[in-house]
Image (cartoon, rainbow over all chains, first blue to last red; front, side, top):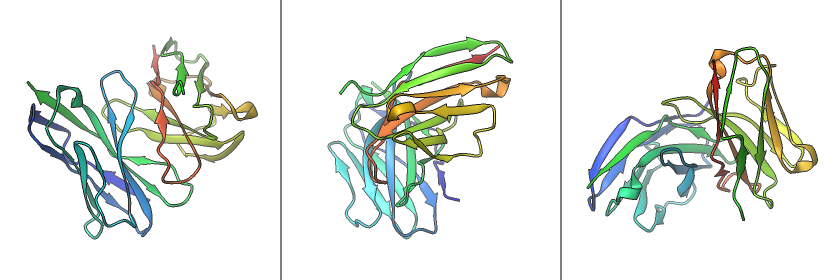
Length: 114
Length: 114
């Protein structure tokens, strides 16, 4: 079974600085998708960024980018120019290319310090 | 697009009672998912539908749990004879078909068992 590991339960970053959240996963598949979701306190989970395993180019969405290392099964999220609104739980998630459900990590709580 | 809607937002009930939650997905989405999230954990998959067909159920979904999606629109999740361990946030998500399609989440229903 696939597993997703987020080794940092909590992280903090100064406003306007850069922070990197770690994620590793375990799979024997070669084709799959990886996601980062953000869950603000008492608010709904929203998609931050998505990576397709067959694409070598790292995905980027404005201030959010990933470092996808397929051989190492690593999928870290970099947040540049951190803002107060970035404070949230961040979940890394994995999905096979078949009709399988998302598998989530335990999350990393990010605090942004003004 | 009004997003995924879940009702109620909070449910408090006594152990042994039955509860039912409702999810209204984004209207164009034919995939609908239920997840359970406990404190300090990422969401765990329970079941999903494509249109009205329930295609997969997790082993987490004991025989006290039942989910329906009549007519392929809204879905209900019922828990019979609730137990303390059922206390959690129940999340609903919807998407277009395809493994790379992002899932859009509702605000969740928080269940507390007294």
